[in-house]
Image 1 (cartoon, helix red, strand yellow):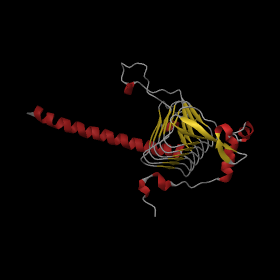
Image 2 (tube, rainbow, N blue to C red):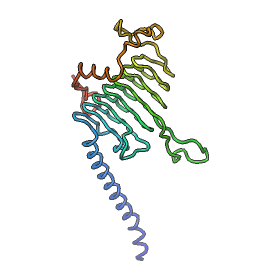
Image 3 (tube, rainbow, N blue to C red):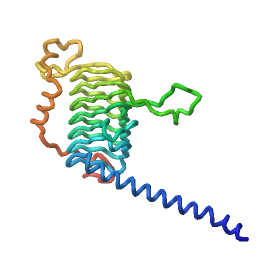
Image 4 (cartoon, rainbow, N blue to C red):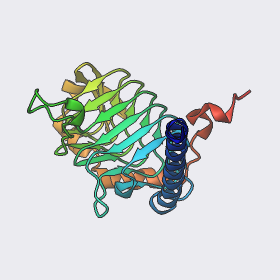
Length: 250
């Protein structure tokens, strides 16, 4: 008789214990998230509550930045002593972006990404097809480096070892899998360079028409960043565009 009662009570007790453990884990995760948001996020930045960040210890987000709703920032092999994913000052990361860091991933200052962008710096290990890929581990030898003041349109994918030169624009839905020089305008899948900025003409010109002299006149990244900071030392980014919880605007 007692065994039958215990059998009936046992599953309920186990369910209560499981719920208690899950609740404690959620509380612990919330406390850790709040701790790292204070320590690793600059002044005036907004991280939407629906954004998930895995590997907070290896993430740094600058001042005045916005990470929008449903974003996923993932450091695949995080280390408490190594910064592996950085988002610079005054960056706006659009809704549903995925930033998956391998060895290192950077969004330089003043970068803007549209919705549904994916920066994939890590892949699942596929050496042995007789092992489940879901449990095979992730690669961590790639670097994605997006320079200062780049604009990635909606649905852009950046994959593998890629350096996006500062001041560049990547058209919507493009697939970028190779380096592009600074001040480039690229589109397509895979992306190709259509235009580059000519500082003498103050205009975008066909890439093959940019003279070597004009290309050499373009500022390096540190000089370019200094110019931007002088022109826009403080920005108020459109936080209302980051999440529906801000409501509609008239």
